[in-house]
Length: 275
Length: 78
Ligand SMILES: [Zn+2]
Image (cartoon, rainbow over all chains, first blue to last red; front, side, top):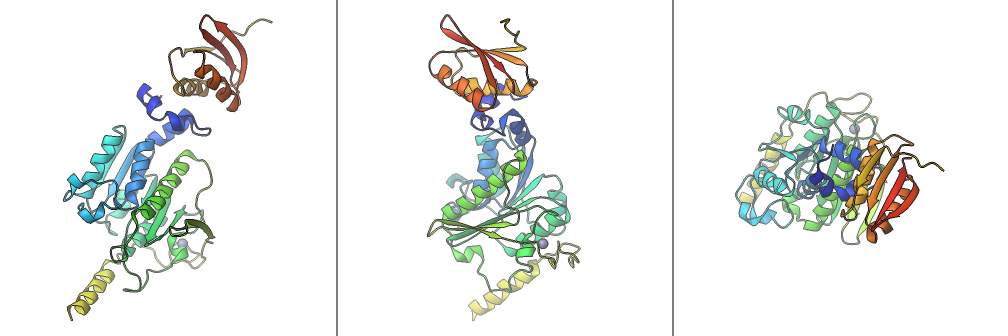
């Protein structure tokens, strides 16, 4: 039963057809894991906490930096230097004390991810690097957890929802990470804050629909946003039968840390820069 | 015709829009199809909005009475 203050707080969504009190109860008992308290995780987390998701886990190993604040709207100037998960939790609790916020101040690895993911109903990937993105995809496929993928690059953004067993996964789209140096990391590429906002909010919306059981998810459909011409496109993505993790004969049976791979990449770059 | 006896009652006098409708909607969710909910609402904005919203959700407003300064509605849950 909703409390009096909850009726008031959530009235604008309880009023919606297909939400109602029962939908609100579903939201209040849902558990969502947000990976990365950055450009995507910030707007996603803010809308999820406002909507009254029961428990929100946030994973991030970084501290808030001044250059984050241009797009990572979960954090504020006074929290520069604080762990992002602490800063995020503080802001989320200010907005909605109903919500339990679980901070994970760590880097996800093949060792710890399954144990974290297992406590949640759906995962939001707001990570900014390929090793984490592939690790999260594989962990969700192996543990059959729904996953909202989001990615941003300069003026472009994309989102897709992965429901293992039902539709394609991220590897169906891109079977392997790009070779080192082929794609600049998010940090090198530059990003307009509002682009992250658009995609992060779409991810929150996917989660809310999933929990409420309404509408049509972005399963097998990649949403592509371009900020310069304000266009949205839907690209149909079929399940890839030779997908290394969810295909007919999967070759990946345990999680891979692409970490070394990327350290190598930075190493090479350092050497080059050093020369 | 004999008036049906309400199965539940909500006094929503002094409750503003849209909370009056939200409370009506939540009460109706708990009730069974065909049961009758009686609500009392204020004239003006509530009277203009609440009955319409109830009908939009598919329920039937079977009776409207003006009692002093207020309105009494009987709603049949769809
Ligand atoms: Zn796949």
